[in-house]
Every structure is written in C-alpha cells, then in structure tokens.
Image (cartoon, rainbow, N blue to C red):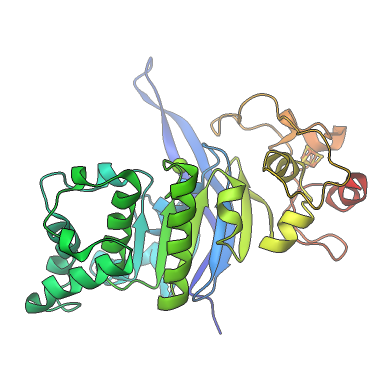
Length: 331
Ligand code: SF4
Ligand code: MG
C-alpha cells in the first residue's frame, strides 16, 4: 500500500536580497533534499532547531512555498505540479495547526463562525442546516463545552484556543494534519493534555500527523517515526523507539542529552552535551557535513565529504560518516 504522503528529494530555496545593492544576490537553500513517507494513520515527528527548515517543509507541502525541485505525493496527487483548482480540493484533506492559535483565530468571530468558515469554501462537507450541530460535535470532540460556541477567542485560555484551532482543522475531515510547533507555546501540563487529545483524535479518526517541534520530548509519545533536521537536511530517521534508545548522529545525541530522563541509551548517566554556537546560515553553509562547525567528533574528512543519509551496518539511516562507529563510542 502506498503511503498517504510521500516526499522525495524536496528542495525549497528563497532569493537572498542585498539591502545595500537592492537586488537578489543569491539563493538560500532552506530545504536541501528531504525525503520521508507518512502512512495513513501514522505520525512522523520532525525535529530540529529554528532555522533547520522544518517549517519550510510544511509550508511547501501545503503550497505556501514553491518547491524548487523534488516530489510531494499526497493521496495519489503530485502536489508540486497540481493546478490551483485541484489544490483546493486537496487542501481539504490536508490541514495545518499553528503554534499561536490566537494569531490565527479571528478575534471578532465567534467560535462557531470560526469553525463554520471552512464550510463556506467547501459547502459539500457539511450542509448549512447542519452547521450548528456539527460545531457542537467538534467542540465536544476536542474537550470544549459545546455551549460556548457563541464565545469569542479572548474568552478562552491558551490551551482552549489551541483546541479551537484543532476543531477548525478537523472541520473539513482531513486525512493529514500538519502540526507546526502546535504545543510549543503552552505550559508543560497543558502541552501534555493537548498531546493526549491529538493522540486520541488520531486513534478515533484515523488521522495522520506531520508533527513538527524543536523539542524531542514533545514528539516522543505521539510519533511512530522521528526525523531530525539540521540545516535543511534530515540527518537521522528511525522509529521513535529506535531513535530514543540508539541515537547515531552526534546532533541527535546532543538533543537527546537535553531531554529529561529516562535516557536508556545513556548508561551510566553522562553529562548533557552542550552544542556550541548557532545553526550556520543556510545562505552560507559549511562545506562537507553541515554539522561539522558544531560537532565535537568532526574529523578532517567531515570538511570535504557530505555524509549521506544512509543505513550503515544494520542500523537506521543517519547522515554521519562515523554513525556506525559512534554507536560503539556511546556505551
Ligand atoms: Fe560530526 Fe563528521 Fe559525523 Fe558530521 S560527519 S556529524 S562532522 S562526525
Ligand atoms: Mg518554525
């Protein structure tokens, strides 16, 4: 069976403008060849620091950015070459939840109006005379009081607003929901509640998620698979279990060392690995391995050869020349 979403060698770049010269002086490669699959009902956690390109991946999938090259097949449609009219049909099945629900909820609209808005564009999904009942159902499903449908966004807490955002995303009965830092702005206890809700919805509705976060601990429980991004590339990908118990890439190891216990791979307990410096600018990436300017295991070779995302020995794919050796180094 083919996956619900299949992304292959995706590249997205932005023109780089010079404020001084007032013209385009180059290209910024925000996404530099990314591939992954998400099966129907599955969840991929996409993790990386800000600037790693993960939001650009999401924005390219939903058509807010144009792919420079590569392929995005969703439910049988090639999105990179889909005519605008067909994209509207596809977008119904492909919804997005953002970090800041407040910014994306019209403050002058009631919750009912916010949720029902989607049905104006897609009237075939829910007939007019069913709007009110359907809004109540959706509110109940996301754990809100259906009697609050006439209230305005400012009358809800941050976590409740994110639930409104989720109800709005569900209104069109999508197959895939892209969550871009969907719980990052919430308190940890509220985060857990919203993550539980998303997990319940996945089970009940058969939803698939592309779950984007900068924090590995956030994606842990909701993801079947995890992909770690750095400087526009996936540097490691594995099942959730495998990635957390046997991280191969130094970057993943550093990210994981910052996640509170348990760290089963890290016995005896080791110091947290602090990565120095910032993510280099995608406008001027390092030669060879993109991570080498911050990697404490870098060797001469890393400055010359770009490590490919491949499986070494019988391990999972990691883009590090020494991934197979690193595993031994950890124990
Ligand atoms: Fe570090 Fe070299 Fe591996 Fe890159 S290829 S992660 S620089 S050891
Ligand atoms: Mg982002």
